Image 1 (cartoon, rainbow, N blue to C red):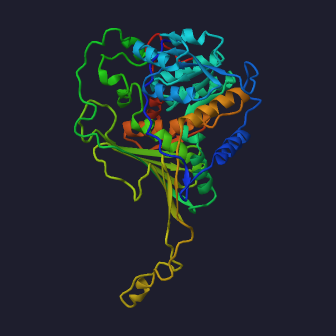
Image 2 (image 1 turned 180 degrees about the vertical axis):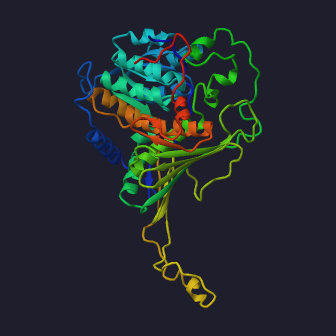
Length: 474
């Protein structure tokens, strides 16, 4: 059964200027070649069913579910494309609905309940930008209603939800794009191809960072209270447990509470894990451990303000995520979100580009130090030199590129740049790290069975019991 809608509240780092190589902007031709290559490489043309055949210039009719902070940003990305008609808007918060309608400017149909929107057979697709705990129900119901889906990341609140979403997308043969925008970027592809091609040698470690000093106020500690007049708190909660209203549990700040989000580990970590999986050709970790907590303890959040996660991937690659919300000092030698450490050099990646810093390698064996001949250690670095060239690229990641890719795939029935299986894989990696933290455990993961093999009690965190009458469809 369908259930009432939520509003979107999602943040994304600001984008920078055009892609530049060696001080020269990457040409429009290069971008067009990238998009053609992406389309040609996509698979699943025969696997995804079409409601109708689209002409090259025919408009795709789209409905938005959730138009708060992140929904408003994604709305702008879709409105940039002339072959997209935003024909409907759904949000439980009237001011958001009205703001979106004015922005669209074509008198879209307005809904409080997303189930009524899904009944509109003239809509080709829906864009879901609601809090994480609503993604599963709304995505599955949209697939059941034969709508293609663009759903913001993280894909789901639980591993079980993510698997059910994948099953629904495949059962109903829908195009489902997960909102990890960097996977539609020329920057992301260039970095992945460079690393996969051995550009920095064998990579044994990838580190990711979310660093933002929120001390001393954080999100504050407001007391529980009655909901504001006209705010449907019960609809906001949806399948989540019944809790007293607190303003920090709603607009934007919901991601600091486990009932609705996986915290910054799923908020930012899923973006970073997607880039790491892509560049290193990873599928799923074999083990994970996490440590941290509310160490600075300056507000009423549930998620950590300090966290370290370590995943062990097949091929003996360590991946880490460091979340520091009580100190803002940089964690790497260059400004970055992700650091790839290879035998030939290090690549520092951010939303504004990347930099490669070569290793200076010695041809000599590391000496056995001895007091009888100190020259051995003095001469160890003799002849050392880099084997690769440094490089620095300034780049731009655009929401509009990801929206473009989705609209193209709605028409062609090809797989999008972030299909639901990939969104599920990287979301799962983050979710099981949260479980490791919450259970204070080193967890071994069977990615095929999607179960922990060394801690049966940890498996109970793979899903939760929905509040009645909500039910996760089979």
